[in-house]
Image 1: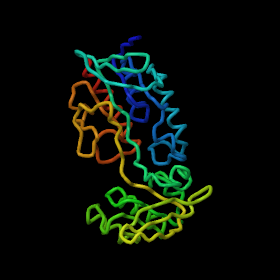
Image 2 (image 1 turned 45 degrees about the vertical axis):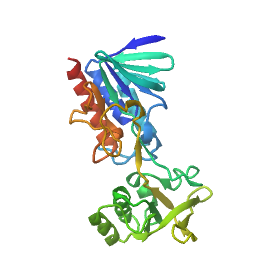
Image 3 (image 1 turned 90 degrees about the vertical axis):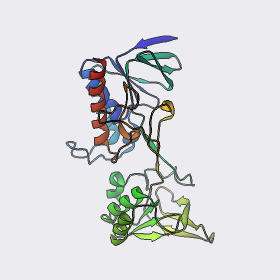
Length: 303
């Protein structure tokens, strides 16, 4: 099996990974990005990216990622579409195993991101991007003054409902329990904004032909089903960080990788950047920042 040696290896080609690759390669590190699904991550699914500083008018998420990729490659970073199967450490080097090749480097960055937890109900997958969304700030403006439903009961769901209430006077939040899990102050603010709560209910189906038209709800106490018309369903059932490859490092209670301010994990030379990292705010702009900081820290570590 072939072995390739680098200064810095990045796993994940979203904004955090590509940003880290750009900064690392520009600083002279021999850098490679390994990505199983192709560049982009969640960003590639954004129809219009309008809140990234300095990028205006809005651009398509795929085009934005392509620019990041070209920048990284222009500075000398390699990007390879390959599935990583394991991570080990031998002496001073991290050993990254794929099907056909072994990669080694003294510094490694985990930028594998996180994925939205699905409800797993009929219609969800079919209507993604056509009324089913997992990001209010990304897609909320497309449903201004329309009927919007939010699914969830935690801080994220309530925060996003507050934002959506600034776009529409008809926002409903559906929660499976009889009270919200979110902080009381946040719930009070949401209800004051005019968001209508539906308690003790779960979504059984999302309905529509080419776009969302309604949802089927079921009361968890009575079993009674009802229909709720809407143009959009924003699902906040939580996120799942992609950390299967790095079980050995310290994580927070939700499974996100913990780092210091230089993005270093509990293992020297091992960094984490982007949505996979434990932090209070997950946006493209913070992911890019994480990646740049990790690359700079890796450079100093290798020195």
